[in-house]
Length: 132
Length: 132
DNA sequence: CAGAATTTGCAAGTCATTCGCATTTTTTGC
DNA sequence: GCAAAAAATGCGAATGACTTGCAAATTCTG
Image (cartoon, rainbow over all chains, first blue to last red; front, side):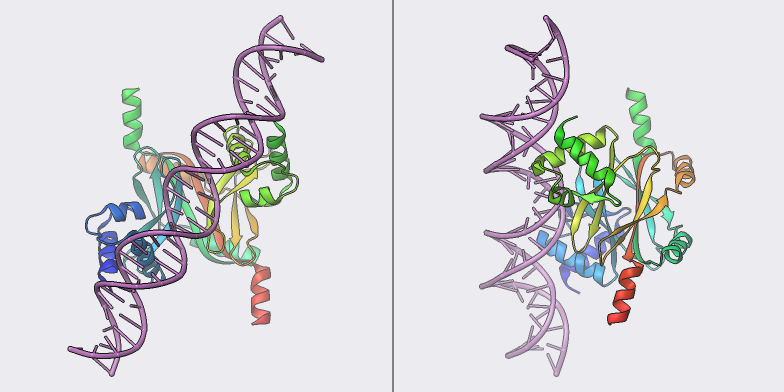
């Protein structure tokens, strides 16, 4: 494992929420070229060390976000606040059953699913209402 | 409503699956500039005539897909086949209940959610297994 | 530690999408 | 209907996320 890959994985493991490439490049622990960040993330994802999803947000456009995969972490889903742009883990995936049902109903092989919520988090809601 | 917008809405209403901008531009019924397609779709979406979601697929990259909103159509979710790239409607949204639960549990205001499945459809599975 | 294999940095390229601006179309008031 | 005002369109250039070719640097193998 190279320095670049190690540092990316370390940062993702410490992170409490998914990080974009922009987040990673801005992190001083990540001392490598942007192209290397992309290439390393692809490697880490192929090896199963990280997970990613693509999220579109009006403010930040369409970006891919990465999370480290840990032994204890189940496949999680996220809420994204369109005001503060923070993510909240809404818990591990509850869809396993539904996925099986869809597979048998339609004859699919479901290899992946994308699910996330967007809206305004409690903190931002309070700030908005209190200041008008 | 201008010609461009009318033609886009007409094509989307006839479509049996979500269409990308590339699909729309390639359609001979759509006789306008690509920039107009983007601008018109934004307008149609703001007015509530169409719905869209961003899907990432290895073959086609990240693209936004559009569907017409009709009176009878509930908010649907889709399965995307990574082989033939066709979409299948897996039925109207079953998440309403869960969304309420998450809202009260975390204090969010959920304004939107993204959900779709990817994998291989029955037809493509059969083709793959029969031809090796 | 040498040589082979892989990764990295850099700069240029791709692709979906947006934007500025002049022109055309649509809408509004009459 | 029609002229003026408002909005939409076409074109081409720009943006931003992400990829790629290639030479140099790093990592792996024995």
